[in-house]
Length: 144
Ligand code: GDP
Image: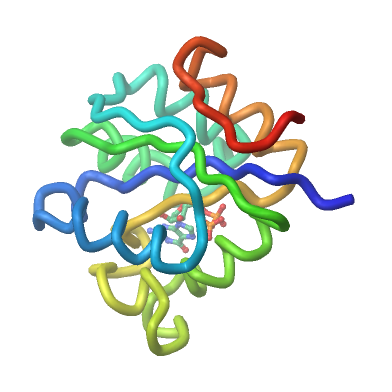
């Protein structure tokens, strides 16, 4: 059975542009429960750990500098089929390719400054939720 949670990050560009409210509203309007939420600033070391799978990519250094450049909102989102449904709501990594009505189409600046992160598998969702949130900071509607 598909999992019921995913981890999102509202990235520094979208926070700077005052899109926290509009993005959270869109998330709620699409049936996600916000089970955990905080506004933080990532250190470079945290950003490097979070995006470790991309360490060899040519865009890695820019991505890390960007992710550590300002505040981010991190949140655990819950609904049935959370990972796939949130990836559909986010839209393609490159906002130029993102479908109308998706978060990245509406709020992203470019492929790097693309407004939001969303977990890409249930396994990574578990790892990413644990990366940012203690059990005592989570308020789940599910009993998993
Ligand atoms: P996602 O799962 O859609 O976020 O995409 P990936 O896991 O492939 O990439 C992680 C993040 O790296 C993306 O959200 C972008 O911020 C950034 N990124 C991915 N591909 C590129 C690229 O080709 N160029 C640049 N500058 N950044 C990229």
